Image 1 (tube, rainbow, N blue to C red):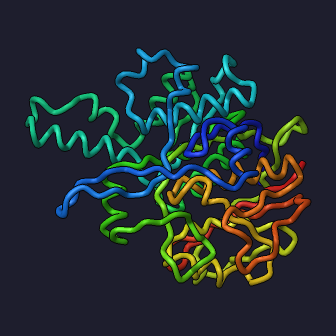
Image 2 (cartoon, rainbow, N blue to C red; image 1 turned 135 degrees about the vertical axis):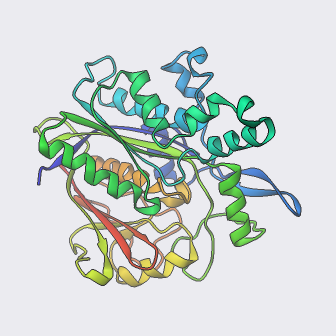
Length: 357
């Protein structure tokens, strides 16, 4: 299969905006945790959450042009512009650029805003703006129209497996020669619905920090943000790193084989039901890291893992795990291969093997 390389990175989250802010947060091991207020049957509650700011988007798009674009699409636009800028492709001909966006939550905030307008105003007064931004491919459509991308466009939603599944599609497009490059990314948004579900599932909590390696504690904090990569076939030019393989599967069907010569980058995010699976899958004492406390618990976090791995491989040095090494060996000082591991449900898995160029 064709080897891919990462040419550009665009990220936005609670840590700030851009590669420099992201790298600083990874090096310092911290990011600001905010909150969202949610109305429940017991009154208004405050749910801890990692929040992202899209104000930097006005550097690329006039504010007037964004007045009908919702926050979900703004996050996707910001990540897209930042990735293309980092790759030196802003203003270039994007006729042969493909677009693949992964999302676990999708445009749930706008979808429910549209339903609210439908309930309160009826068919004749329902919001057309909310409707247009609530459809499955809305963010990809806004990105393609605003940037002038004329290649194929796809949105993938498979909750925790959204990012690796979308990456398989992006890789196939490049292998088939359908496109010369792919703008690949993931975006998730903290909405009142997501916060309400978090509250209903885990109850009132005052979590100070995520503890992804503590399998006996529920420490997840919902997050939002966008992480985009510009991917091309390996042409021998300058790039962050290479992507050697993408594997998805089910452990009951066999096939999960982890490399013993790579730093394991774990997608553990404080969810108690998945924490034990990570500890059982990766042997104690293995060289492993986990950066989810920088960006929070969300399906799109898998794309942030890929961006963090790309930065570590470019620098040749892994970042320390913000929550400490846990049962694993200290992070490797010199790193040339990273295997990103994402687990979902009782049996699903995905691995992305990346290497230094």
